[in-house]
Structures are given as C-alpha cells and as structure tokens.
Length: 487
Image 1 (cartoon, rainbow, N blue to C red):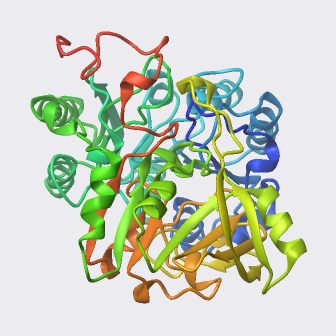
Image 2: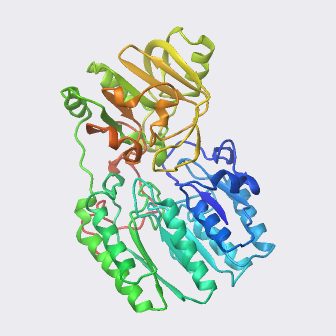
C-alpha cells in the first residue's frame, strides 16, 4: 500500500519539488506506516484492513503535498519508482491512496501513468484505489485498476471511509465473494469548486444519489466534481460505479448520476460580489466569529497564500478584532524572529510571488505591529479532517497590529482546523473576525464556531473567474466556458 497525492494547479506559480511532499520530503518504509496509522486517511483504512486479515504490510512510500504547480520530474519518478520497485518484489494486492488530479512535468495524467506502469510490471495484480472528490478521472486510471472509490464529502472528512470501501471490495474479491466490474463516464462540465460543498445542493444531491445506489446494491458509486484549474483534456465532472458482476447496472447508475449533474449544470456556477461590498457587509455584523473567506488565494488549490488584497481591504475599512490565518512569507518570518517577541516592527508583508498565468505581480502590504508569538508551527489535527495528522507550518510568528493579529508561516497550510490559531495562542472563538485563506475546507473546523460566513473575492490563482485563465488543453466545448456545450 502506498500514498502518492498532489492536486496540481497548472496555473500556479508555486513549484513542486520532492521537498514539498511531507515535511521536507516523502516518508519511506515503516515511517510511512507509523505516520498515518490511526489517522483519518485512506492509507490508515488500508492498514487496518490488512491487519484484520493478518496480512504482511509493505508501505514503500507515503507522499502528499499541498496543491501547487506541476510536480517536478525528479519527484514524480522518485515516488513512482518506490511503488514500482515494491510491486516488482511481489505482492498479493495493491492498495493506493491517490488524489486523481496530479500533473507532472512529464505527464498530464500522473495517476493514470503510474497505474499503467504498475499494470505493465504486474499484469494480474489486483489494485484498489481511493481518490479525492476533486479527481479528474481518466480512461487510463479506470483501465489499469480493479476498484475505485472516492470521497463523498467536501470538506473531506470521509477519507478513511473511502479507503475502507475501496480496500474492502478488493479483499472480498480476493476471497471470491464478489466480482467487481467498473464503469465510468463524464460530462463536459467544469464546475466551480465553491459549488462542490457536499452539505448543500447541487453536489450534496448528487452524493445522496450515489449513496442510495450503494444502499441498493452497488459496491461503490462516486461522483467527482473534478479539479477545474488543471489545464488537461479530462478536467471536470465525472462518475465511477463498481458493481458485483453487473455491468449493465453499473452503466445505468453511472448514466443517471451524470445526467442529473448535467441537468443541474447552471447550479455549479459560482457568482461573486465585489470585494469592497463583501467586507462592508461583514463590518455591519456585530457578533462573531465572522469568517472572511479569501478563496482566490487558497493554498489547498494551488494558491501562493501571500496575496494581500483581502487583508488590505479589511484594514482599509477598519475592521477590528481580526485574526488572519495564515500568510505564507518566509522572509517576513525570518525578520520577525530576528526582531524577537515584543519587538515593534514595520515591514512589507506577503506579495512575494508573481502570478504570470493571470498577469499579476506580487504586491506586498506594508504593516506595522508587535511580535506576540514565535512558534515551531507544529500541531496535531483535532478536528474531523485529517484527524490525528501532524501539521508542519514551519516557523510561525504572530504579528499584532492592534486591530489585526496575523499568523505568518514558512510553509503553505490551509486553515481547516482550529489548531492554526490555537497552536499560537489565539482563541478563535473569541475573535470577531477570522480571515481564512480557504475555499471550503474551513468548514470542517471553523463552521461549527461561526456566526456568519462572508466569501471575499480577492486575487489569486484559485479564483473562480475562469476568464482569468488561458485553457489550452482542456476539452472543448465545455460548460460554462462554452454555454452551447452538449452532453
């Protein structure tokens, strides 16, 4: 069993070398098993399934990186080779914890290429795959494994369950209890990520249909919203269904899911309001916490996490009692650590990254404040997403301007857990405003404490404005880029 996960934003200026995976690199061998055992991940589910069968477990690699630009050739080969070499030594089955939207410098279909290479090396090997809800499913992925099951939640709080379903089906097949057949399809749709929350329509309705199909006998049924900021041919919405030997039934379920998605295609289009109006609305809300969602610069979709547009507007309009989580600026972190706790410092914050794909240069924001906290930036997730996983934000500093407490970090990290603030001494429930560089994963940890949520349309390479991006490889016509698209 192995993990190889990266959601690739082909428009992102953030590089993806090997060191971006894990804490300065992937984990190999027993370290991979120990790091993820007991966590809310598919790999943990695979481990538990294998232990219950008293099977020998080999974990050649566990590699996951925050979304960014295409994975460097060397990183992709090093991680892939670890898996291929382990398979080459012989095994009874392979469980893979993949994302489904990996693009490398050598292939637009990172997962499909890996699976194809595995199949060539071990033609008869039974393979089960767990995928992210934002997977861009391809024919090559489906052709080169036996079972696929994906997350049914966004935020992703059912990762363990997806691994349990995929691995469980394969184990039953090994025992001769089922004969999995798999069918997939897609529709020419490029849904906006902000419309993929599974607690509400339209995505929630599709997920409920998939769950109903499983209740009525399908072994697995998954709808993938896709990752729209990957300029590859197959980006967009898809579905995969696994049944016990009944291909016709699988085809019917899959077609039904896709037809329903197509009928709801207009509901997958996100409509934003001007940033100044969003912040002005927030200013009128008296009780907090009010969540200010800086969704155009979300590192968990490939954002640089250092655009300052939303924070600048918050400061311009004079919002008070604000905590910001988090700005990635290693230069600022180093300078503030050198100054020390208690020091009063003025410096240009953020804006260190140019974004040529959308024609924007980095624009730092001049801020002044007192250094309140210096931390190693590590904590263990207590909330429902990635429960039990140790987070590494790198060296972390809190700069307090008086009105705004800004968490500044060295490594990208999306704020989906309250530990982003609590690990540096900020109690988020007591703040009037929490400015979060997130899209929807914030809901896992922060929605239970929120009075209201205000989405703030700032600047960044995770914007929902498709007009900013020059798609060249994406299949066309596709909705909503091409309103005339047909299923």
